[in-house]
Length: 308
Image (cartoon, rainbow, N blue to C red; front, side, top):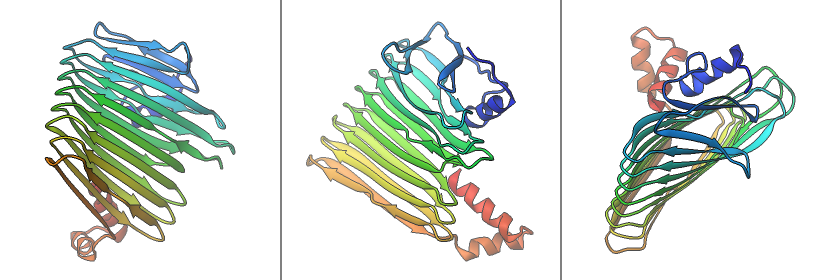
C-alpha cells in the first residue's frame, strides 16, 4: 500500500467522487501501478490477479452494492496495461464507479490501457460509470486506451456511462457488448477534445438473443484543431431492437467523422441509426447573451448542457 497525497485525493474526487480517498462500500485504488488502498465487503470481493496486472471483482448473487475502482497516475513516463474482470451474480443490482486520472508534470508520455471484461449473470443489473481526466504542467502527453467487453446473460441489463472530461491528448476506445435473450444495454458516451487532441472510438453491440435491446448515445464536442472519429455498430442476430444516435458540436478547426452502422441478420431485427454534426446555433448564443451572459459564458453554458 502507498500513501495518498493531496494531488491523489484531488484526482480521486474528480474521476470517482471519492472524498479524501475514501468511499462507502468496496473499493480498490490503483496508483502508479500499485495498490494504494482496498476494502472488501461481505458481498463484493476484490482480489489481485496472479498472472497479469489487474483485479477480479466478484458480486454475490442477489446483492445490491456499490464498488469504486479508480486508477491514478502521477509518475511521468509510466505506461501500463491493466486487466480487470467483473463477475456479477444472478439477480444482483450493482453500481460500479471507475475512472482514470493522470497528473503528468514531466516531459515523457504517461499512458493507461485498461481492459475491462464484464460477466453479467441472469437478470442482474449493472450501472458502470467511467470518467477520464488529465492534467499537468509539463510537456508529456496523457494517453488512455480503454477496452470494454461485456457478456450479458438472459434478462441482464447494463448501463454504461463513459466520459472524457479534459486533458487527454490521445485515446482509442474499444467497446464490445454481447446480449443474450431479453438482455439490454444502454451506452452513453460523452467526449470533449481541444487543442490537438485525438479521440478514436469503436463500438460494437451484438444483439444475439431474442427480444434483446441495445442503444448507443454519443455526444461530443471538438474544439480547436482536435480530431474525433466514431464507429458505432449495432448487429441484430435475432428478433431485437437497436438504436444508434450520434450528436456532435464542431468548433474552430476541429474535424469529426461519425460512421454509425447497423446490420440485420434476422427478419425481425429492428435497427435505427442517426448522426448529426454542427456548430452552436447563433440564436442560442444570442438568447443567452440577452439574459446578461458574455459570449464566452453563453458558449460554455451551451456546451455544458449538451454534454450533461
